[in-house]
Image (cartoon, rainbow, N blue to C red; front, side):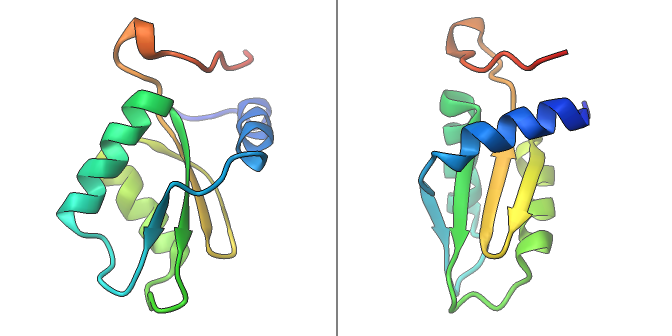
Length: 100
């Protein structure tokens, strides 16, 4: 699945008001962090992460790696903030309706 520019803009607007719920530090992407992100994506569909100053990995590379591991889509990477989106598997958990 890919996002159209209209859908991406819609998700960016939603993410603008969100606070980061995860921080990536010097240990980088651990299996535990990846599992937590996957669980959060199932529950929320749209999440924001913050890359701390003591993490020496590139935020864009971190976003791509997380996206691959969690089967999600990178909405945007601005500075040290990452926004990911994944449609919830269960119908009852779906909160976001993307524009066509």
